[in-house]
Length: 92
Image (cartoon, rainbow, N blue to C red; front, side):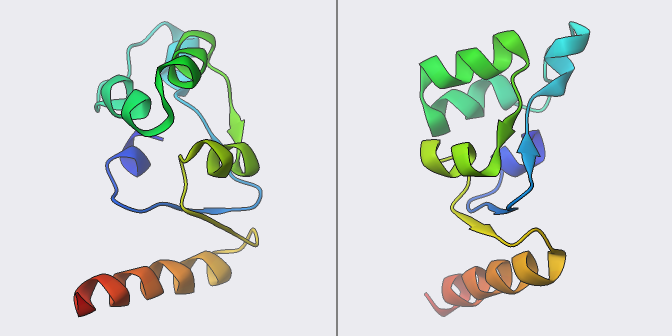
């Protein structure tokens, strides 16, 4: 989750599960997850994920703004969309 949080745009497969799993091991996420997550999805939802170790499915991640798009659960579907985002950004 923390690597994705550092990205400008995020694409997830339909079966993706997103969490800060370190918190279930009593480890503080060390790559900025506790700072970036609240900025993306709001403090209440971020606190729920961080404090409980809750795993969010792709649909909920899209609903709260954690991912920009959901594709079929296949790299062959997600990669073309990510590349299309990249082409659009390069064009700007």
